Amino acid sequence: MKRNSPTRPVLRRPLLLTALTVALLAPVPAQRVEAAAAAAKVYSGNWNNRKYKTDGPLTCNLTIAPGNQWQATFTGKGLGKPFTYRTRLTATTAGNRTNLRGVSSVDGERYDWAGYISGVNMVCSYRSASGNNGTFQLRQTR
Image (tube, rainbow, N blue to C red; front, side, top):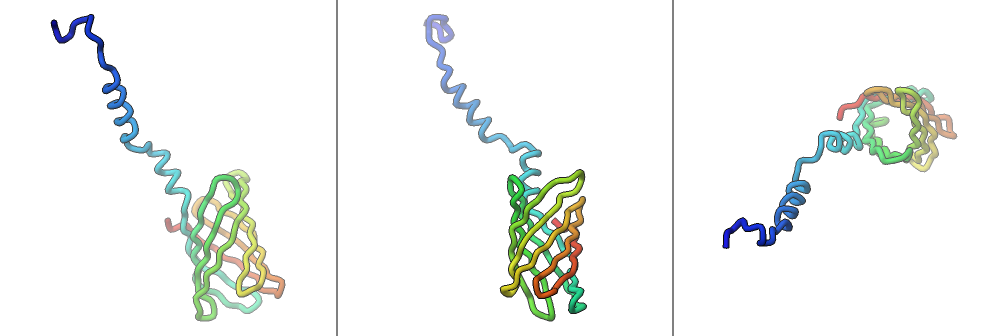
């Protein structure tokens, strides 16, 4: 009997398994890699407090989640002391801007803040019930 005889059944399963294996091991398309990288951004710059006329460095690690609820961790230095606080942000898109609103607790005090991201810039203002208020302007570093 010949090897390629028409009467002999052709085994297609190994070919199918090989094709599936190659498809699963293929590189991830560039768009998906970029989307994953865009899910976490870092912004750095300075903050100021108008009430006390103080300022200092500030970094924001921003986690962009599906939908409009994002997470931000702010780290910086104020009055010579390091600080860290986290906040949940509500993000809405308006043209080429992403508007942000958030509420944070810093040293037990509530802070309301609002701002926007446009291109690589994050610009925000904040206010607390005790009168602390100011701005921060950050630029994307990663």
